[in-house]
Length: 173
Image 1: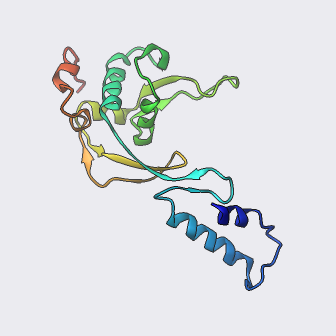
Image 2: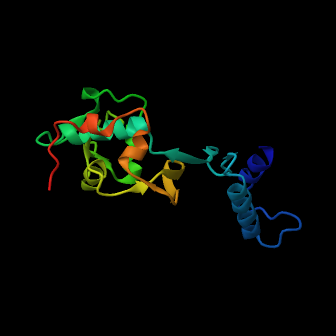
Image 3: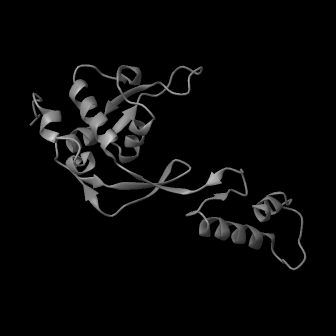
């Protein structure tokens, strides 16, 4: 949007006619940015698309979490390459604090690729807690939660049978 590019190109020391205080320009820009986030808007500072995304905790994520919890005991960190996870949805489970990624020690790689369930994730898989059904993200940062909560069986939906997925799993006390 041209108006944002025009605002972003202004020098902070430049005084515009009719604006007594340059901070008014910043307040106005912030308000316009917030007002248009739902539909998406280019950030006047960095140029990135600013948009609020409502992400559900879906069936593929829940299924992968169950798999991770089942295989994890005794394995420490699990390499994502050893799983059937595709597309990166599994990483969104970190927003709910259901999984964590091993810190990356290799500067030549974007991330470690190693994951494990958190205690929160384990209790969710064993149906001891509920979590928000959706997370609201802006620039991949959590800015809010859906008020309704779900169990893992809700996340799996009608396509998956929880009992079948969990068969031969010993439930910890």
